[in-house]
Amino acid sequence: MSDNNVFNMDEHRKNINPSKLIKSALLIIALLLIIGGIFSSIFVVKEGEYKVVRQFGDVVRIETSPGLNFKIPFIQSITTLPKYQMLYDVNPEEITTKDKKRMTVDNYAVWSVKDPQSMISNARTIENAEAKMGEFIFSVIRSELGQLTYDEIINEEKSSRGSFNNRVRDRVNELLDRDAYGISVTDVRMKRTDLPDANEKSVFQRMISERESKAQEYLSQGDAESDRIKAETDKEVATILAKADADAQEIVAEGEAEAAKIYNEAFSQDPEFYELYRTLKSYRTTLNDETVIMLPSDSPYAQLLQGISE
Image: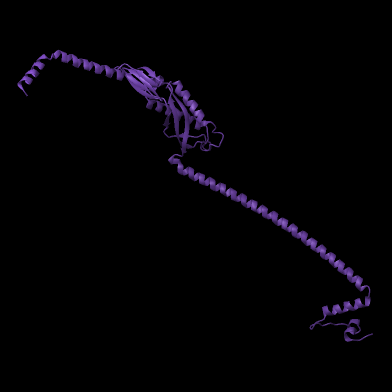
């Protein structure tokens, strides 16, 4: 570098005013602070959420409509609350039914924040609101199920259960409104009902005994019905056979009468031939190789056998 250039740079440094540099730096910092303040004062409210504006920890306003909004930078802060419906899984608890049976019920609830100001004032956080809602749900369910028997609870087809879920929902909302928690329950549903571990084995054994007793009752009814059917069948068979036997005897009697009539008509035409026929027939019946007949010698039958004619 030439000596002239070095000399010019030195002269330029001498002409720079330090105060101007400081002012420029301060101006730049101020602009940055202004820009940062503008951006930090803007916040966006989205669909399905509440924006809570706090100042030194106190709630000054709550924005509910979607869009751009402003706050005082560095003084006011923003927190968010859900506006959409949420699902809360209620912890399983044991209850006692109307017929003194212990059972474990597991429920869930669909809920939402309807008044964020009241919710913040009384519950403060979402977790606290859910805890309080869970207490109310269990209390109401225990009271409602305590008026039903075990069979009515586990069998939805039985009319006694009716609008159980609706009754629980309405009663829980009444309690939440009473204490101004700013939340609302849309629905309460029972996921499942279980027996406590300590009672499960004994209940199952009792159920088995009841089923066996019922099965034996059905078997006894079946045996009684079978005996009744057999008795009726035997009676019908005996009636049919007796009628058939009577009909057969009547037919035989009629046949014998008709035969006797025919015999009488035939033999009356020649009595001597009929007498001979009866004699010959008696020979066939009475005489064989071992027959011994003792007759008087003057008996016509003896004379006939000996070939002696009168």
